[in-house]
Image (cartoon, rainbow, N blue to C red):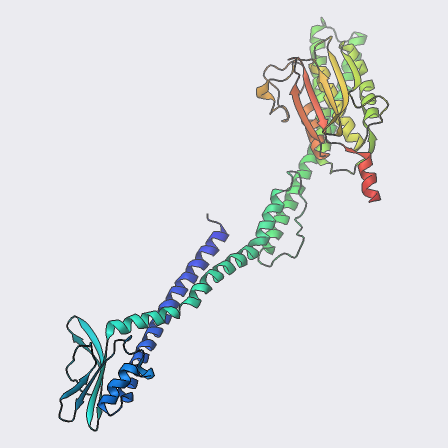
Length: 453
């Protein structure tokens, strides 16, 4: 379907062009008719203005100021006496037959003449003019009447363009407002100015749709959170019962079956925990940022995962990359809980996919002049073909090892998006391991500068 703008401009400009053409034709026709009447009046004036004395008439025609345009207009003058003899005719002009009194158009040879005859007491005066000359002069005068229309048309078209653009500006503003909204923003649309009456029903319908989508989305998130919460308790109880039965000997087996059950049960418990975390992150609005130390969050995360890393014989540590040093508090504006969950997911993901005896480092550094942190491991990395999809929920590569569920990086990406941070992944240059960087933290000093200003 064509745009409303193109449809309006097409019809308005074509309509104006058609109206201007009709008006131009009417103006031209009217001006031409009036010019012909003016030339008929000229013939009468010439016939009535000729002196009664023949010699004087000839002198006046050739030198008189009143007849200066006669030669230009190719007017023919002929005079007959009372006896009907031709006593005078204009020089360099053909002789026409004497016609009855009055005005008429005749054909002579290949041309037409406009002739006016006047009967006077002692003579008959006949004045004539070629129709071609009259037409050329009438056309010249008529075209002179059309120049205001020629100026008016471009001005009108420019005015139409401006008016249509101005009239459709609210629709363009609505389109830009919708285009710049994030995928998770379901708040009602709010215009800076007043909403035109014509698009007010559209805005109301969109706001109603957004409200219903928000209710449905909240219901879905609540269901996932409730389901994950309800599943976590019985699974934890089942885990404890399995451990108790294995210890007191009531569950007898060679150990392999119990080990597989325990592994799968741990995987289910972790999946439910990640689903609960993801549901909470989806349900949470953008929280207000506070001053938080990335160094303390990093130290706490390394401490929390030290036992897991030690169990897998992985070297886990916190590093500082120049110009960041151990003495720097690394204060930034962020949501402390969100950043902590984000870093914990990245560390847990790195430990699970790094082979035993490997290394995982949490690095505090600067990226583009702002504080950032990176989780670097020497695991298998990610194939380039899967690099764009690893942030999708439940996506795992074909050759991925470990017991993950494909939610760790998705949770980290969701938290980064909610806090307006940039999460990027890159395989290490030496071909071993992966680096996940989180950048874009605003420094705590920026808020102080804005407050003082």
